[in-house]
Length: 252
Image (cartoon, rainbow, N blue to C red; front, side):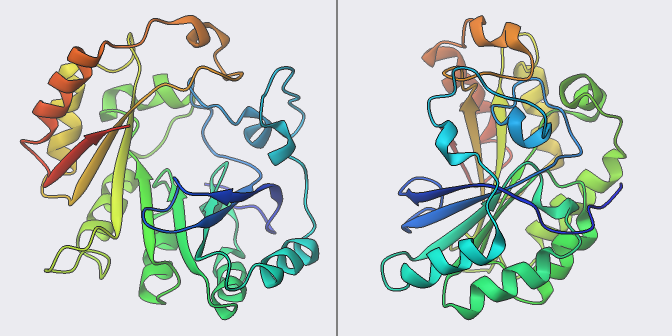
């Protein structure tokens, strides 16, 4: 996997109650990704030349200088609890550890969103105590990864990341919910059999979220903006299957 030479900040959401469980957080969007997932709702971060025409929250996605970002974070000390670093894919940036160190020095907790393709970076961040919470997307079983992500990937790296997270200090014996796995459920791409296959990969994990496809903005595959979502009953059945493999499964 090719690594970016420097952190590129593609956007900032100044306030969120949803993205870091139990914490008031700002969200930093990094630019660039090694996947082109069909259901991705941040194509402007995946492709720098992309311009969304109808994105309702497009003010979140504009290039921000690092000095300006840290000036904002310093002003919010005592008002925000945490910072969520998402993308794009943050772990493709070689300077991510140094970037997080600067955030931690301000007293913020840090949550990382990742696709799990850089297990060495994930291990480094956990071992150096640079992240307090991690959310890893499990896109599909191995056989469907290329179809969904648009990229060939060594699935062994995905499995390695899963094992690192489950066995890490973020998974204490007195379970405290410091990590999660997430799967976006899209009709035509993910079905019940896939839930079983993914469940086997993350068996024993603390928590797994099944989330409906986001359709109120432009997606990389525009056809998915009109696909009929799974019914509440259908996704609840998938969640029931998932609970056979993890300690907790919920629907988002």
